[in-house]
Image (cartoon, rainbow, N blue to C red; front, top):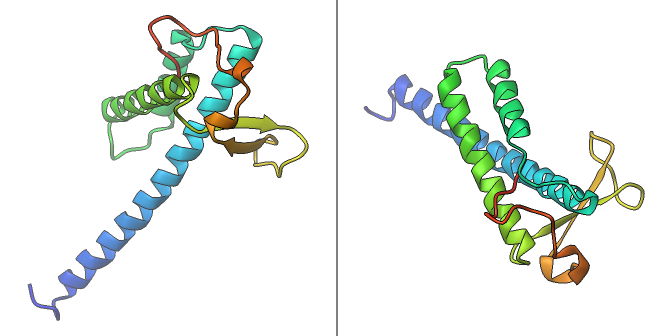
Length: 143
């Protein structure tokens, strides 16, 4: 196709739009991962199991119900299974002190739309008492 071909311009515009959407997806995935880490921290503080298969199934049902296509529900389910797997991996790293840590501050930091303030700090700055959790021995974690 030549540079004067309107299809070439449309193709370039669609690719730029995909790049913008990819950047948004990365930002949202990282925001979600931070929330999952904070949930994991709270579960440990409360003595709750990190891995909760009923919650995982609820998440998958929720995203499938929210799906308007063109991806089918199977595709959405597979994508979110992978997202959940990565949240578990990140939580294992955080528990080992190898990943950024998210703390929840209810008053000192600006809040997000959920009314809870999130502040990231390196895991090395976390007190040792936060390192021991109540997770499963198989290392499964995530939200």
